Length: 531
Image (cartoon, rainbow, N blue to C red; front, side, top):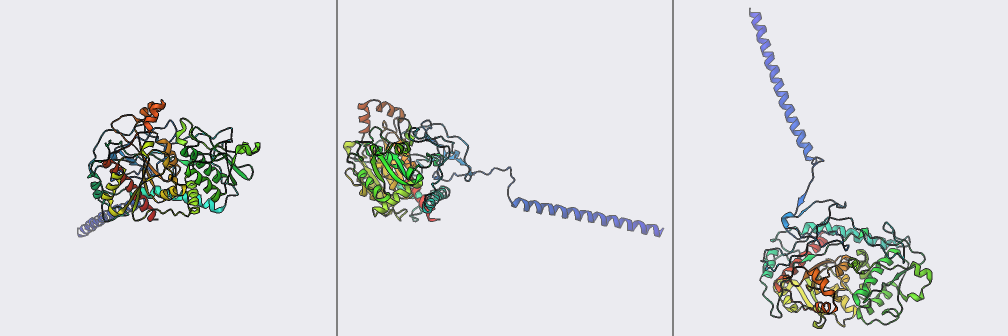
């Protein structure tokens, strides 16, 4: 009996030890699985996850946007801040389409200090199709032309560096602009943006003129220049650019439509640059009257050894190889000024050096200027002095402001002015033509009469540079500036009357728009400083 009891007792004890061992093993396995899962989770999210980042702290998002600027493309639709969601896609091309057309809101409004007056739309990059060059002048190709073998190593590096800097700007500025109203400017870290905006909101009515409430501040996005094509390689040791004669081609901005386009052609093809114009045209067989054009022609000859001649001096073979750059004719206003951005910087920088003019960016003060027009020409800003006075009140010694008139001003003086100003406010007009000579992070604010609203014209020039461009309609009480413009320009009398409009945009709104421009400039300069 005792032996049986002893056997039973040892058997029971063995089962107990076995069960205990099983529990310990189970707990060890569970703990191991938990640790392994935690370790795997730390390596990254599953492949099917889609990461999206919302920017909601500020409407100032300055990453370069890409947009279809064809005649069929509409102005960007402005989105509420809470609906703005951007998906980071690296260097891949975005596939979503552009929002449908929506004109800037024209409701009369008196914005309080902490309200944001504008929102910069971030649009997806569409696939756009640019117009081909004149088929009678030279055939087009389907892909971008490769750099000519004779192009120097320095020129290749110049293009690569500028394109790289543009990409860095687009990414870095996007991050820097996500600052709250309590944050301070990069150039003025003792004053928060909220205080600056409060000062601007305290602006009083102008006593110089009857103010009109302007429309909203509208940003003109950049196009994707990588989709532009040029003709094949040159045939011979010359690259001949044919001056494109259109109506009013003797007038400064229309003449520059051809000149700026030639810069990109000469840069792409290399060889000796030749500018061939029509017989009996100013600048070729007739003397130039505009001082800007006189200086520019001489600067191209001195700096780049450009040969200026007339078409009757060219052989048939040379005429056949000559290229006429695309230019605005009718609805193609979006190509009014075509020039590659890196070419704009390279050529303007070379001309400035030749003229002994230094172009400095991002100083310790922001330099704001108003290019005004004589009242007899129309589109003059009547309350310009009030705007300058209020800028001093808001920014104090952190701003340098001035007003200038370009009538009878030399090419060198205009270049000196543009290269030394960060932000420019002006009514629509020919005085904007020298804008490519502005420094890095430059910003243009262009004001239009309600019934003479053609923002695509000079936005084609800013699109060919790194200058950011905003447009403003002078009267928000009207609902459709595009229709009003079509109606006014259909008749010579109403067209002349619209062009002669004198501008008096509400000083307070203009100050708030200028604060927006200063924030853009400050973010751009901050990104340059962080490189």
